[in-house]
Image (cartoon, rainbow, N blue to C red; front, side, top):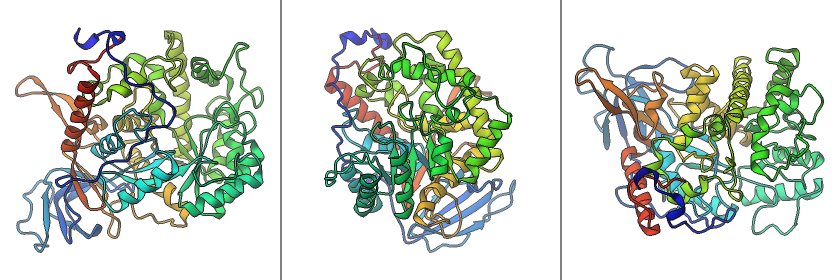
Length: 538
């Protein structure tokens, strides 16, 4: 039946239950990356340093024991590079002449490939690294114990994985014996306990046991303990705690779009729900979000600017994660993305299909009218993000991949494209993806100058090395590359993809990482009795 094989006639993976089934990544094998080295030199690159500075090059980047120690001019643009450039006492030399170097990308909203959507966490890790993502904020990556263990293993470079920041939800942790965090006292107690376990921050989400007074206690105690906070201010609680109110209470990051437009409702603090609305019916839940576009104050209104100015004053970061809901405005585009056949696990593909049980699989009867409402909602949301950026507010990049037809790594690159659609120029997009993320992660720790996020002397060696200029076309960052007409042959050719990702001074061949993932997917398909070619579809 080929590409459109009947999904009902293909053996289904085991039912996915909650966040169970997390399997740690296997140990890093010989040949999986090289380094770090006593002295490594990357030769002849054009540098996009993440600070907003214009590209410059050619330069040579010198790295010693995972720290950038020098960036040297390697020649004059348009002329041959200087021969025999110092230093010559290197342990490893990477000739990247004509290529581009950026800081490692930072994804501020991830969940690991848990829920039995993949054999183990290396599936998501390798896809992130293959797309230049060298740091992730797990919200949650996995359960607390697994997340802390994986963070330590990554820091020791024992596994092939990005740098991991561990954010957990209140009440999580096997050693916590205090029960529900449903009072300010209990919430503070858990925050202090979790800080001692070593977490980096707290993720707040829909929880009827955490009314405003409990959230305020969490925000306050988190700051005292040097922990970051990020909140998905869902429909369950947003009527009493909007993004504006959360910002006043000390929230660090608003993730997704939740809470923004509820802060701007024209008819008071509660959205006008349809009378037959049911939050647990996910098509109701997500289908009605786009109604906020009409119910909220207009862009450019005094209420609009007052909201943005106050959020900036309170130091709130906006982490929009537009990619994870982009299917709502064009379902066919998301479902037919180039990468699904080779890089999407069969369990994950099954999870994406319309389902009353699987979270985010809410396309039970998704109509043109719904897509149009979502497109209009995105226009307004993008204007909000661009205006916030323009007044000096911080906007970052997060993907939330693993749901809604967004596969790890690929979803992150789409987020860069969506920020450009929102009005960010390409250099502003790169800064959102690098420096802004680093500041957001390290400021709660009392480190206003983060060790990552820019390519500067003294910073850690987290880098993305690419052949194509990403500022000219972010599509060239996708692992599947970009189709371009070769004018000499008059045939389409596939160009781009990340060439090398450097994390902690270890050089990974991004194409090899993708090949590893492709083999993982092929093996799982064979194990489950799926066809090797194409994807089974309803």
